[in-house]
Length: 583
Figure 1 (tube, rainbow, N blue to C red):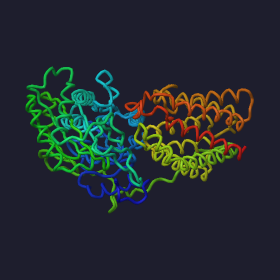
Figure 2 (figure 1 turned 30 degrees about the horizontal axis):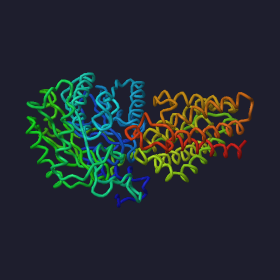
Figure 3 (figure 1 turned 90 degrees about the vertical axis):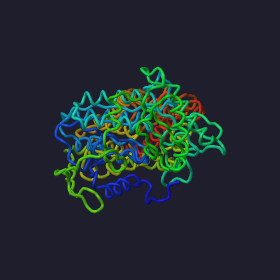
Figure 4 (figure 1 turned 30 degrees about the vertical axis):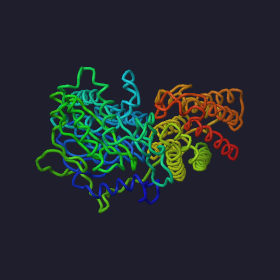
């Protein structure tokens, strides 16, 4: 378990602070993550990677020459927010455009996609690429739905080495696509990981058994098998990967492969070497030529006891890029000429943090009516934060049935930050729209992940509908909720029946619109809609998930409601209480 921490909610920020203080030769801190401390040649494509904390050396440890130009770092097992990614990418940009790279998880896809839109609006040409190498998470016919695990490293490196050669953005993207299409990973675990502050692991494995087909966010395996010997584990990993070759590789014999045997946190290096000796022999027996193998901790999951094997099938071009030199805090290969420090970098303190003083916050002008409405919004967000805090453990338990168990933690971080930001904006005289907009950004930044993106979207849609000039009536609030429902579906792609928060949001929005259309006051209309939401959330227990991290474990979730749907229903009822107190 994770033993050394202060406030669990501050763990990721404090870890990043310590990392930057320890590695100033390679990185400098920026809002949202880190960028190279060395100068990037003008016009070079910037490869910006990112994901949640808890996977070191991914992602911050891979920033440096020959690899990433920057890394956006989210909270524990939660994607960074679009605003954080935008900040890192802007700092890393050297005039040649930006390639955003990340593992294929719903939250990362949402946030990196939003960041790409913001960068494009700034005039920065941007492309995105999601690594999807985990063969246990979807079949070959649905390879686009696969998770990204330790295959991140060879795909990141191929793209970054191409960028170092001065290739334009579209060609760097094509290299990433080629490397991704030829990368496969498979893993096993003997115990789950324990998050900072938790007193139990996210999943457990029975004595003398192992989980097969693990994720790197504490998700349980796809199945279980008897605990193997080291040689048996090696055989399982190799034989499983050799069953699925890239489309243009008919036979492994005579092929070259970059090989990564990755430890997930608690498996010691000596154990990895015992397994690797057999991995190398089995690949040799199959006629595979191993190129520059890596054995060690490269993409971890806190203290998870597990290993994964990655094969990237090389052609001449990919081999050149795999062998290219790199110099980062956690990954070094070959030799590079001495680098110049970036002359434009901001000064840092001894703790490694920027010393620049942020500008004082300014809020747009608002009418008296909107400022009064902002008080009700603040009370509602306070109610949201309190109900989430009261149910965070319950939400985590529900989420852990088929997911990674962090929904309660993420919702607590997001709702608390949203209320704090709203209070600050309200204190400055902001109207209802601005209070909600500030809360939206704070929720997305602190929660990260899918829920952070979606709740940021909900609050921002409401804020846009309410604005800062007029007193919002029941119809306008209902209109904002309807717009939020549409925005969430457009952003995440989920529809009713997919076992997500959409199964509650859509009927809630429809019921609220119908009730306000009948002329009911807002509190009464909201009460009726919240009752609808509660029933809809309970109904998700009978659904099989078709999206998100729970999808590979669909059958396990039968009989349990969706955590996001349940939390939304709790929130709608809590907001009703605030409306009663402020109507």
